[in-house]
Amino acid sequence: MSKALTGDLGNSQDNEKLNSAMDGKGSSDFIKIEVGKNYLYLLSKNYKAAFTHWIPAGGKSGKAFVCLGGLDRKGYAPDVCPACEQAQKFYAMKKKAVKQKDKDFYNKCGNTFHARLVVFMVAVKGFAVREKVNGETITTFGCEDDAAPQFLRLTEKQWAQIVGRKADATSNKKEVQGLMEKYPFLLGKDGKPDWNNLTNRPMVFEKDAGDFGETTITPSKRTAPKPEFAEMPTLDDAIPSDSKDDMVIAIEAYNEATGESEEDSGDDLKEKKPKSMLEKESLDDDDDGVEPASEEEVKKSKAESKKPAEKESADPFSSDEAF
Ligand SMILES: [Zn+2]
Image (spheres, rainbow, N blue to C red):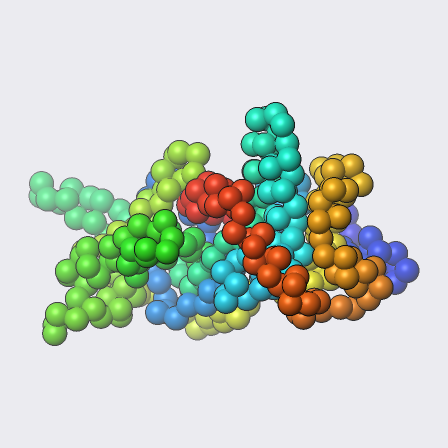
């Protein structure tokens, strides 16, 4: 197969191929947490966070996009974000479905499209070797010679394990103890949290073999020198694409591949959408969608985002299943 792409500007398939080559982050840029113990060195305390949609393209592949609603909308902005809108459509189909099997299916589709909060950090994968020396077990940490810094994608749950989370009366989020509360050896000499203590020792990410692959994060008690690298990736490069056009292309491709087109399943739902928004979509392809059409619609979309269908689905997708 040729390594180059021969394309015709008039061929949307060629253009799409090239777009996805430019947007898609190679999987090698991201650390894959395997089942069992993973020894990671956090190379910096810095992080970036974004609500992220994962739009599947068949099999395990797909493309990540930043939710166009931004952090303020907490990952649910169907009035400005096509992926959120698609999630909303699936939840509406779930509500309408009669058979439990269909309800489950649409719920799963909605959860797939629903944005998740993802925190990106820079880390490197290492290893631990246990040896018995004179009857004493000694653990040595290290990194392979060809190890390179990669982006670490933390789920909301993993993030909470690191920094902790207070119980929030307005949501169903439980109190989670952060590493500084759980492991006093991470505190500084003054007894206050010293976050540098996360970067001077391996962190053990232990992943369950279960369906949701829950990951438990434990800092090593012993410090070990952090590996040094001449070049470090910039966190900005970890943030997925925010191109609305590409997002729409990816959603259309998904719908075509799965047969979930609007024609056969979304007619009624389409009617529920604000009328002026539908017109806007068909008339103005370049619409960036940031302005809601009217106050009425904003209220409507806010009301819809509080629908029980959305709440019921919160559990499976707040799971640890990383993409
Ligand atoms: Zn979104």
